[in-house]
Length: 117
Ligand code: AMP
Image (cartoon, rainbow, N blue to C red; front, top):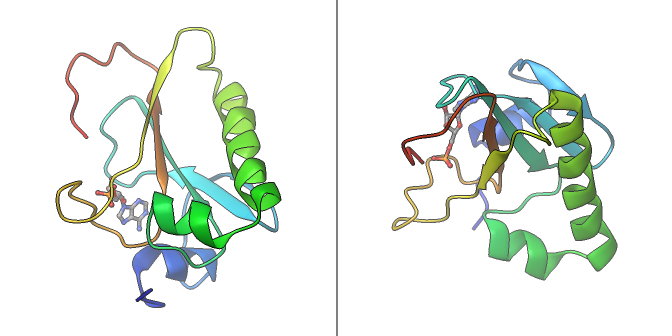
């Protein structure tokens, strides 16, 4: 069951501020408050969804596709496309997901020696 009061839901509703990288009607990308790399951005679809499987299974292909197209756009905007980056999405207990709203971590801007997340 989706928790409407999780911190990312509050950020999406504008109840808690964030350092925005990109936003449109369907998604929001913002800097992680506790960065694990020089560049660490989180991307969230605005539709309520707990994790990757929940997001993909509950939404039209066009919505899913749009989110990943916007992830491309943000990677380009951050200037990390050529040197490389890491995309991570944690899910559930074994994935050690802290915030129960589907999100993608975009990490880069330096050599990522340790797989921290
Ligand atoms: P996960 O373990 O994949 O659920 O990651 C949750 C991420 O959210 C962590 O990297 C946190 O540092 C980050 N985070 C938690 N609260 C905030 C916030 N208010 N603004 C930005 N990032 C946050």
